[in-house]
Image 1 (spheres, rainbow, N blue to C red):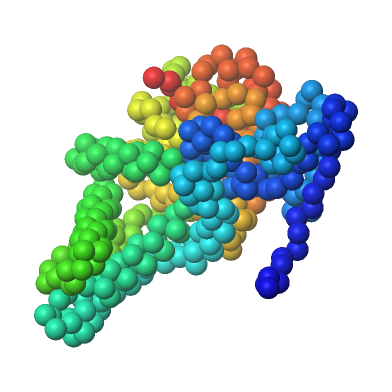
Image 2 (tube, rainbow, N blue to C red):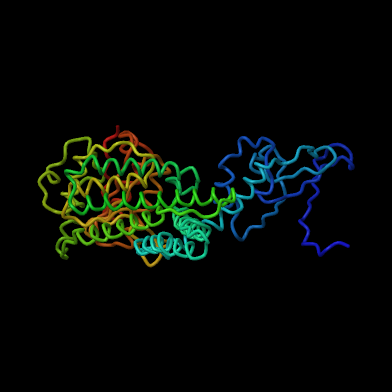
Length: 447
């Protein structure tokens, strides 16, 4: 009378040497996401970050003997479900807890699909925007119009197109929502959204000092933002009407949003066409390498510039002088600092070609360079400075040196105290790295 049963979970009896045999607690070891703490109010976003970072290596067994000694940590306790007569809990997991557990289990596959989508769309984002604009702004409303009796242009088909298109584009960005140390955290979405708005406002503040391609880029970004928000609002309206049974509606919002998005693509293509692409000769690489080698390993831009930097004529010297004229505002993470750095260099090096987040190979897994100037100067960006940051920074620049041999490497430190950079435990790593490859570390003034 029972259907086929799945393979049972292994149950391990653990005796603590206390009480009788009948009172010995029984532990059922489950995965970290299968068990919830009693205090679910402290769970929060940690369910998602735990799911994004597996606790065991692939070749390890997820079921292990529990450590009942004094050093057993709280993380181990989360994976133990007490089933013995002295430890069974009467309370049941709440709906909110079950929902968080379910969503947490979806994070790892979502991140894997995010990486695949990002690689598929690499270098093709403008075409993706065109597909969204045409599909959601014209094709879907037309299908709604011919399939409904009242000629609605915002119905079920439009809702399906909008939700799926914006969902896929959002999924492609999901894997990038990480802290500076690589930990994935869904709260980064709000931080990046706020920082992105601040970067747009900063572009607008420096409109008069920006080159033409940077101005067009700002216009294109604003048009794209308006188009995406228009589609999102249309999706919300359609969802509400479908939920209450009102059916489709006649609306021009999808058409307007599609036109805005197509206009954004046209403007951004024009901005890319106007982006400088200066010719670089082999002698320029040699001059830049020589200029970096004659400078000290660590350069503090809060101090007056050394004479070689103030009077030098290489691209490296020009880049350092541009950095010295910048007093950046405080940003929340390294990704935002990279974008702000690109915007600053666009204003002060209008004839330079700047490439942010450039792939080092055919895949993102081959490595990503923070910023490249004229295909010659390789920049790495780090926020703060301690021993862990120094190790990550030197490892990152060492990978750059292996792939981009013959090019000077510049490590730019933001929000880094002077004493930590020059006298801290990580300072020696910067000097040793300089002896290994041509690395110039630049400390930006703090706020």
